[in-house]
Image 1 (tube, one colour):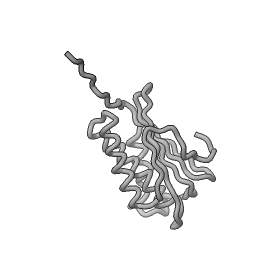
Image 2 (spheres, rainbow, N blue to C red):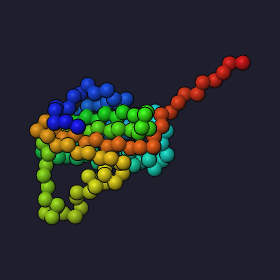
Image 3 (spheres, one colour):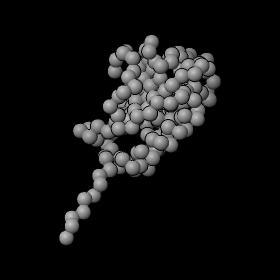
Length: 151
């Protein structure tokens, strides 16, 4: 990942940009769930892990990136067939919020550790142009349509 501005025209199998708010988080999570179910072969645990990790990244963008101002967030998902993995990018154009974990109530601050626990690889890249979260989920396969031979 680079510190270059995030492009909205990324080559992705699933790509959305929406308002950074709670309604958009729910809508994007639902749309991603439908897309995953129709395009990727996943067991129920893997599907739920992906949806939960993505929900956490989107929620962080919606809640913290713009600090009460309006902004957008993006979600790009790409299936890497060579590595049988799903690569998920969540990004915003807001600012990173540095938090002192010792001063944080114990009911907050679980999203990033959860993303790291659920994904095989997680990279969080804050920059002056926004924050980019990339998560990779291995051991996935594309849904293949079955060809039927005519007799």
